[in-house]
Length: 373
Image (cartoon, rainbow, N blue to C red; front, side, top):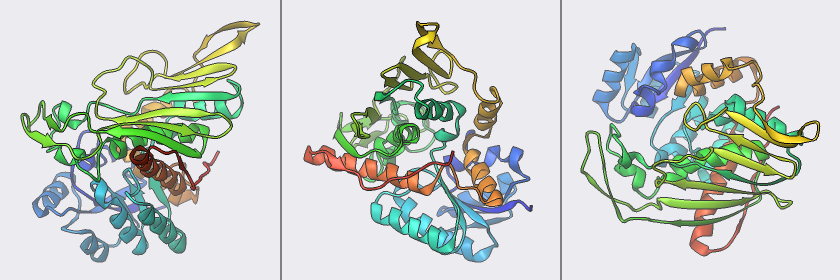
């Protein structure tokens, strides 16, 4: 089949950085070809188009949708405008790959779902962690009862925030209402634990601002003072029903950590995901079994399906993984693993976590999802 004709919306770091979409497309040029880019900063759109050999540059989404033949759009805009731009892309009849979160309101998320169904379009949504072999293996082990009845899980989903390092752009907007670490980082942990355990039923949360200002510690904006208006410290407790719980953080306050990325505790054992290759020590996945060998308990590091090759490939693609997954799903008619319903469920958890933190009351969740096996 001919490569998918892609338009990229947003020419910032997620598009152009070392781990971004555009620098990492070479291995999948046979699947997807970027034919246009749009950004509200005209000079930036033109410069990126010249740098990456993109034929067309536009100053807004509407002009790109009207000005060139596209099969799909990759939405790399800032968090607050995801909902409106995703809806506009789908209304134009284009397949969609979007950065996280899907939107910032359930009304926008519902509209996106309606448009995708109405136009029979494929949508894939970041984050892409459930494509990683260790997350998929953890899901399989849980579903097959390898650690017995799951009691609870702990998920680390935070870092120190973009102001804590040498962020190459102005990090102010990360700390403003409409953004914040819950949407920026908490989304990863919620995506992972719901991907492994399934849909949650309730959420309780605490949230607040640890300090009213942040000072940028490095990079071109070093020394800049940022007024913090979004909660920068969020801790959530998810209830999956049948006395299965998970604790997930979403903060800009984890400057360093030695513990695993994710641990799941069952009545017959434990699953540990170290977080490698992005951090953490030890194998990517370990499982502790009370009866590991002949009645002996102990830790086992199982081989990943197909060895290390799938993880190396995913890590090599960086954020171009979204384009790769979209192209495969469109070409084969396969339902995405990074599907719209899961992204909508994750968004509801984040919004209800905010409400729970404000009201001090547990919030019931109404959305659900399933993942293809």
